[in-house]
Image 1 (tube, one colour):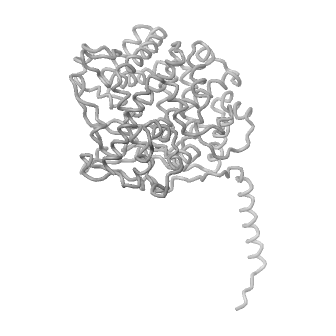
Image 2 (tube, rainbow, N blue to C red; image 1 turned 180 degrees about the horizontal axis):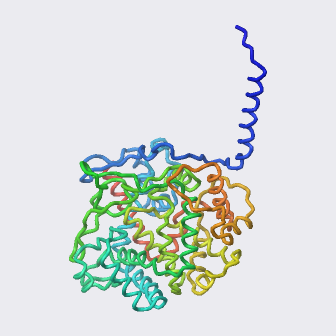
Image 3 (cartoon, rainbow, N blue to C red; image 1 turned 135 degrees about the vertical axis):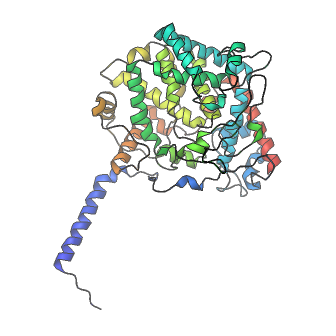
Length: 488
């Protein structure tokens, strides 16, 4: 059969091919080694949620999933492998790519959170740090405004419900002051959870110049790097339209009695919604952070943490002079609150804090408006936070694109609402232009201090600098090993 093509058909075809070639040429710069996936389907549906009322009612891990953890010789060796996300190295034929290393990491971080909350000495130090920050805020805003903020917090629901603020509040506060680390003869494991909740409530007191830059950082930069997220995951309790609530603290994707803080005179556990499990819907593999977290078995709960901004920017506003040890512990406390609440993994907190610390340092270099400078240079906090996070890769190790870093800095610091980084709607499908903006920001932050070449997800870079928690880390790994040996 002979097929004849008309001249008009051939011309039209050439025009279409040319247009497609021009489109590819225009947007080829956004092509990098990691995949760019758009939220056209519910990829979170493939994430298993394991629920069992009692551990042991069914085997939660297959033999293959535990083989590697159980084969390591010492708890110290297990701790190093798990904290630095090196699961797939030399795992042997019984534990290959199908091993649920993500499950192991979630369980380890959850055990660690529980033991950190129960550490009386650590909580005493953390309480003293919060006291410094709250006192700095009180001096900035005055007693009347500060006390009004305290009373407002008393009367409003918890921002992070793991603290169970609704329990016998009057009796609790009469016996145990907000920042006390001991409650009579018993330790209250929710002291820092309460302090963190109160700290977030104080974010409304920061001055306009701090709020302007903080919100710019979150709404226009961090959200872009984080990528797609909604709060509509909607994991409902059986037979209801209420979001599912659990008793345990942490980020594990199943019910486990050993992760429930024990009842005492001051604390009665009640179920609360874990955002990462029941509420936050993120899209795996969209953007470098999610892609690298996924391939390294780092838990993605609600994505790079926006709430961490309330910790570090409010501390910046307070003018509190924290030393290096106190700054590390304060950042750890953000993870304790956000992780216990089921909202963020440690990497999501560290990534957020690192990005803001770079933002502050570069503000001093590039911003023509100097309104934020007194806050950055007026205390030790910003400098110490940068030094603590200078060896942390906040995003990942994939390819970055070539950018004019000075121009990007000018766009970030000097153009105000005219910046090309307009408010980012993280619930919408990104266009190719939006993808390029995300990759521009990834490249900007990763080119600072050559962070692209630093390992991503190496928790020991941060945790090894906090000797106060060495025993808590080993205790968490010991419990994880007991669990894997018992239930596999």
